[in-house]
Every structure is written in C-alpha cells, then in structure tokens.
Length: 309
Image (tube, one colour):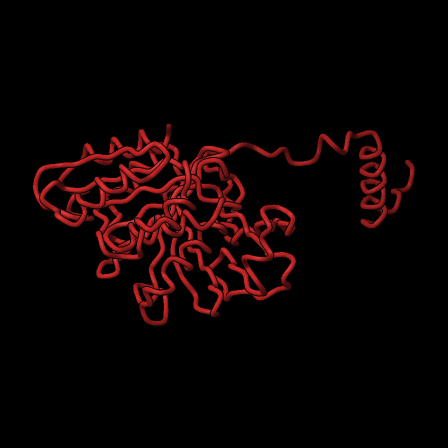
C-alpha cells in the first residue's frame, strides 16, 4: 500500500485555472465579446442650437453708376436698423435686405442735413423686381398705405414706405420745403438696392405728398414713373413749366374723386400738360387719399396693372 500524497495547495489549482483562462481568451474573437448596441423606440434628441442672426454681405456701388457722388455728398443711408454710417464722398454702402418676405425690413436714410428718415421694405420674391416708394400725406401716416401694400407685394412689386419728417419713427419736424428733396434722395437710394429692376422705379403719394412725388420724380432720372392719389391744386407748383418739362415723357397715373374739386381739377390739368402717357382714373363722390383707396378696390387693381405694364 502506497502512502497518501500530500494535498496540493489551493494556490496551485488557482494558477492552473488562470492559465487555462488566458489560453482560452487567446483564441476568442474579442470583437464578438463587445456589447452590441440595440435600437430603442426613443430617438436621441439633440439640444436646440443657438440661433444667430445671419451676416449679410455688403455690396459697394461705385460712383460711376448713375453719378451718385454728386447726389449723396458725404452722407449715406445704411439699410439696417443700426446707427447711420458716414463714409467718403466717392462710395456708399448698400446692405442687401434678407431673403424677401412680407415682413417689414427696417430702413433708414440720412438726408443732406443729417436728418434721418425711417421706413420699411416689403421685398418681392421676384428678381429683379419693380420697386415703389410710398409717401403719406403730411397730416397722415405710413399706415395710410396698409390697404395697398399686400396686393402690391402679391403682384411681385417691392414696396418701400417711409415716415416723413416729424412723423412716426422719423425725427425732426415736418418741413414742406424739404419734402421733395427728401423723397428724391430716398428714390435714388432704393433704386440701387440689390434685386431691383432699375427700369421700373416708381413713387406714389397722397394729397400734398402726391404733388411732392411728382416733383421728386421729375428731379431724378432714376425715377421712371409716378402715381398721384388725390393730389391738390396749389402745392409744389406741379403745373409749372419747369416740373412738366423735367418730367418729360415718363408715364403718369392720377386718381381722384370727381367731387374732390382740387384733386379732380389737377387731374384734368396734368392730363393736358404732361407729354407722356397719362392714366387717369376718377370715381364718384368726394373721398380723398386713404379713404378713396379703401372705398374703391378697383383703383388698386387698375394701379397694379399700370405699374406692371
């Protein structure tokens, strides 16, 4: 009978087991041991990104396009809500508006005496698009044009509405002697905005501002036509030989109520005196300006057809 062997220490058993485990792992596919991701019913949600305003590129317009430096002097209009920028006499900066929507894009224009005229742009989705400047009556406001802006925009026309001096968001006091000059400067600046059809730049006005619109258009070649809603007979000498001669053969649109003595008289007078094609529209009653637009929706339809022609 052989004597009993002493029991192996526990540590030797553990050593063998560990050695076998290492050898076994050497023949395993480690990638197969990696956990496999499984789809869940709940998608992964990213946190919202920070919204920033886009930086719109600027376009420099040289002074050899339209002899602009003689018009703007040393001051320019910056077409943003920022403070007005003053730069040299040979160039001015135009900041293109954002992609066009019916939203009101704020504009501001620096006049020759430093006065700031503020307004808004309703840009057309068409490129290039006709553009119209609207001037309200001195005893009214830019809201007088509210009924006209949506149909103009729907017809593919860009619209700029301004507050005259001393009105709305424009500072200072109303000054009738500077009204025609203010409107002329605004016309010349919106005419060179990106996306504008320079062959179809128009201005429209109501009451005294209708007369001022005609004088302003006659004073610059960048204005191609004017339309007058309820003009007045004795403002801004629109029937003078100088104004009629400067306006030349450009198209003219005039609308007035037949019992509006002053407006209808000027309608007939300008129809005879202006050399270009005159589209006159008259209505019964004595309504004027914004009230005439509200009461006569066909007036808006006729005006849009004329502007698009």
